Image (tube, rainbow, N blue to C red; front, side, top):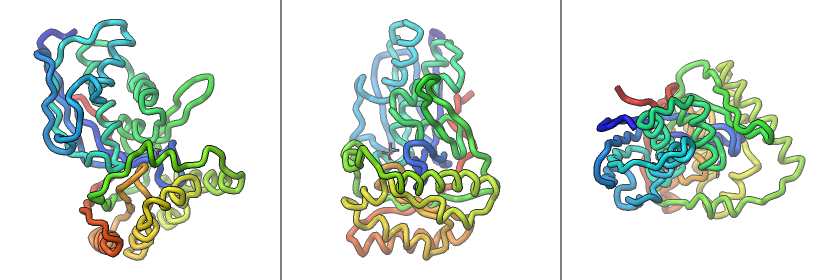
Amino acid sequence: MNENKKISVTVPATSANMGSGFDSIGVALDLWNELTVSSGNFAFEISGEGEHELPVDESNLVYIGIKSVYDLIQQPVPTLNFSCNNKIPFSRGMGSSSAAIVSGLLAANYLSESKLSNEKIFELAANIEGHADNVAPAIFGGCSIGIKDEKNGWVIDKVKIKSKLNAVIFIPEMILNTDESRMSLPSKISRTDAVHNIGRAALLVNALSSGKYDLLKFATQDKLHQKQRSKTYKAMPYIIEAALRGGAYCSFLSGSGSSIIALSDKREYTIGYEMSETARTFGINGKTMVIPISDSGAKVKD
Ligand code: HSE
């Protein structure tokens, strides 16, 4: 290890699925968690989002990321001190878990002088997460696609987004549990639903790179998870509808929720107002944020 070294890394928030790209496509947002790791007594100091909820022991996902690198290089994890300054809303479908994993991996990569590539970091992160739609944009930024080839493992590519887009995000006070939310999804789908999503996921990538943003309202439609999740989140389709009415190009559930995202390059405050007013009629309170898509992913700070 780099003796007495101190390292800070920043990792962006992410929004997974983007409607049709279930478990495969996600986008990075310009809102960052910062992790500082130094040698010293084992302790977690957490400020900001999740400071009262996150574990301060080896079950913390930052530590799981750290350990994954040391396991790979077959070395014991040194005694480390962790300071987390969290801005990504905790447990709201904005990639806080992936940010924790990726920050741990990057910090360990630096401290152990392993020089793992970002592709290797991505592989380790996706193996911990189980799907790639948050970890890919958390590492590579922008809109990233991650798939798993049965023989060759994880594959990543990044979509070139034609011009600046903002995410208008309605973040409810309520939390939806990702594991429970996934349990509501059927393990088998019909060919009609598969065809529905294949075409739209392809259209999503093409519309983002061509700048034909008017196509996004079709491209982000989904039949694999949103309708199923709306059984326990009844306001969701109405909040999505409100965002479109407010002038958004598209709107979808962020990851497994509870946040709902709309993409736009104008009228962001009207869109946010429409979303939160509609949520309020369902008794759901929350806050609205306008955050640009970030083309950069996780970084080691100088
Ligand atoms: N693709 C995942 C899901 C994202 O929808 O459950 C949440 O981690």
